[in-house]
Length: 419
Image (cartoon, rainbow, N blue to C red; front, side, top):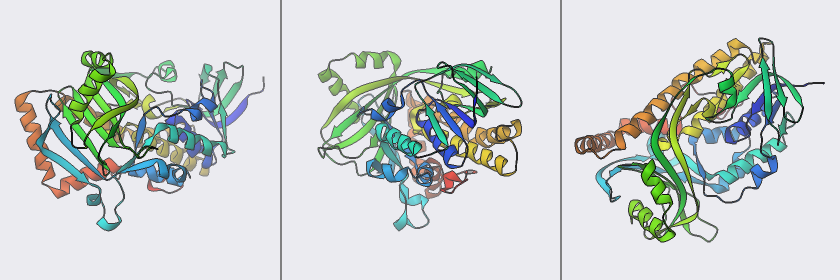
């Protein structure tokens, strides 16, 4: 059987896989992306309440790839972030930490937002529209990998449809439970947090004014993220509500009125009357960090390499930086007449990304353990710590720039440039 050949074969056409395909295809790398789900169903999904936090530097990558023009009208800027401790009643402590987007800019008058909240349905649709216009990318869906073989010279994928693909490199964008990672014998440090994140949309009486809030309740963080107003003009926020698993399951079993009462108590009254809108989603929370990101002709990106706690909202943005770095090292290798899927190319990618990813994995794990309890002395110490950082402008600026993705060795696409 004649095999189809490519520079890059991506397994998984989710938000990471489709973005990698677009970045690689626009850089001139012949790319195939494979997914079990029909391509049409990925873009036809209606409103489901799920959103993605797009950091400032991730937005620059989207702009460089021509995606942001289709997203801007659906994206709500994050102008400020307020972090506070809260008790079982949901009332925040008077000691807090507040970040203002203007602190990260040399000129406050021209400061950019720290990030944007975008509904997943718009993000998926925009990526797939751009992919449809990219001649270097082929989407193979629905189909799935049934066998893979890799050696020093090439990789080969056998699909359920009977098709055979020969490629220089396979990228796993399958998520935390990726079979390619397991098949390659790549171990992972993994543990459960014993928490469940309840994801939903809130409609509230007063505007959020672009302020994102993270309230640390005894059971876990309660994030209120600003969204675009609804089609009916209602003010909306995306909610990521973390609770201990047993309590979260009981909450999800409540009738609508009882659930609303529990939710409103934790949300508070700072934005007036609040109601939940649309479906509730829930996800058990765990940490997964691969022991290595590469193997012979195989690379891990996004959650396949590192699945972190949503406490800082940075999980997707880590994957975006993975993608930018991978495309850059592949393009540079090809310009030098080298193999973009060779071991030395992949090792450069792994070294580039490991320190950044490890720092975020460790930080989110530590923050969740530190704040997800109601121990009196610990609670007092962290409240004092938040207030102390709030009083030091240099520290606020440092953490703001971190949240925006402006710290570290940034790939060209993250800087808004072509690789």
